Image (cartoon, rainbow, N blue to C red; front, side, top):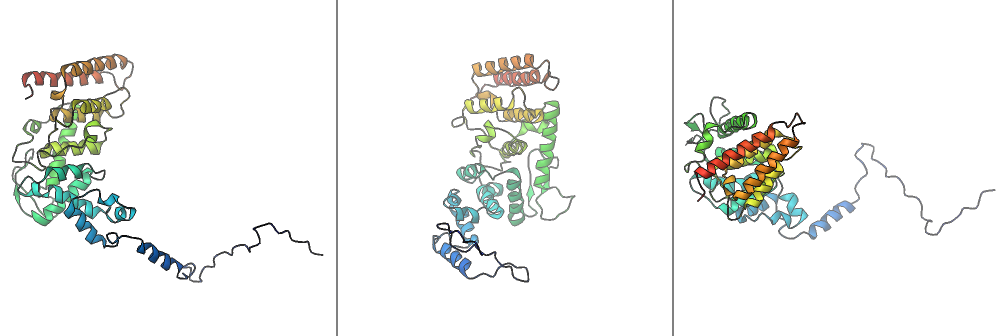
Length: 323
């Protein structure tokens, strides 16, 4: 005699059958529902979102409205490719690389984007060179080779802009991080005829306030190398003081990075903007940290070097008052 099955309310339906795979291993055959769903989703897209990616990229570059990708998830996915980022960098800085200043607002907006990292900027620079400046004779400050050609050829004997920059960056980094000294060409940066960005291009606040990493240090060096300056009217000493404190503090992880960025701050004349009492407070803070670090071999003597460096900038400010 069979047992009487118990029927639970709402549980009378048959259990779902496992999806059967096709013998060729491609999975279940589509029954048209997925295609219908995709068409329904496409109907809900705006006319702008339905445009091809190439057209949307062109619209973004021409309108220079960097908030356009944020208007919807679809627009973000379509306008987040590496090619459109390079096009935006070229649109922002290409005129300055060519023969006139360009528009500082556009360059400032591009630099504020989270994707505007060093590699993206220089990849765009190389793309612009291939398209518009092949075999052009250039003169650039800080170059070991005074007569340098832009080139499209992959010839290791030809000096490229990337090689010039990385050579100068490597030399600056080694001098600043190891010896806490500035290379010879720092005193000549920038000369007016060597501008790669508009002089009024606004440096992103995050590059002055931190938290910092090595990519940010390279971007800051490139901006100084290219002719950018700190806008004292819109970027106050409170911002740069916060950046200095993010750099120099007990337990900092990378002494080399701190030394490089302190030197970069000096190249931007940031310490010239600090009031006298702020400079005195930071010197006293370094004194206290030096006393506390006597028992720590990793930091012993480091804060005294930072203090000496800061006193050197204070002496330079006294000899060359701002304004």
